[in-house]
Length: 99
Image 1: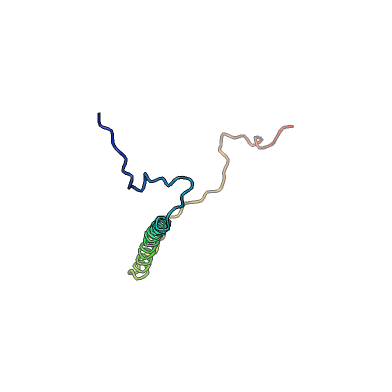
Image 2 (image 1 turned 90 degrees about the vertical axis):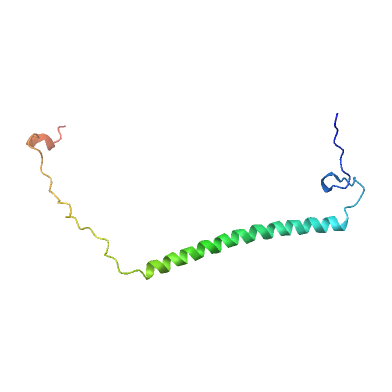
């Protein structure tokens, strides 16, 4: 039966115990990795923001310098408005409320 042996030199398997201090090199490397991760996150987030901003500026300038288009208006006839006329089926005394 194959039993994998733990490598004592691997970082993930190191255990310094309760009474031993963490070496300065380990502390510094952890801080550097955290700062590097934050730098990558901020770099990509900021670069996506800049790209979106540039695309917006390009669209705005293209729209600004386009040839004059026909104004947006209704070429169709306006709706005919009709005044209210009661239908012939209604009696003239229907609009009186009986109490």
